[in-house]
Length: 134
Image: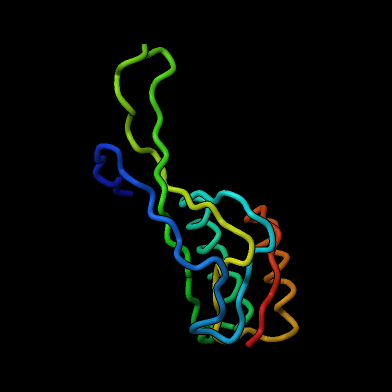
C-alpha cells in the first residue's frame, strides 16, 4: 500500500454534510454511533463482505458503493526518540464517523439475508449500525 506524501501542517479535510441519504443503491448501512475507523480495517471488512454477498447471491450480480473518504492520517515516531525530531512517518489513514453517516450502499440483496449482512458488519466494524431502505 502506498503512503501519501507528507506535507507540513496538513489541514484535515472535514465532511461537508452531517447526514447522508441513499444516493446510488436501494439498501444502505448507516452509522448510529460515532467512532474512528482505520483504512486497513475498512478494506478487510469490504473484502469479506464481497465474499459473503457473492455467496448469498450464488455468484449473481450485486453492486456495492462505498461512501467513505479517509481524511486524516496517523503518524508514529519511535519510542526511544527524543523531542524535536519532527512528526514521524505516516503509517495509516483514518476517518472519524459521526452519527447518521452512510457507510455503504447495495443494489440487490435478498430480504431474508439483509439481517445477516447487518450482524456481520456490526461484528466487524465495532460501530452501532442500522439498515436503511429506499
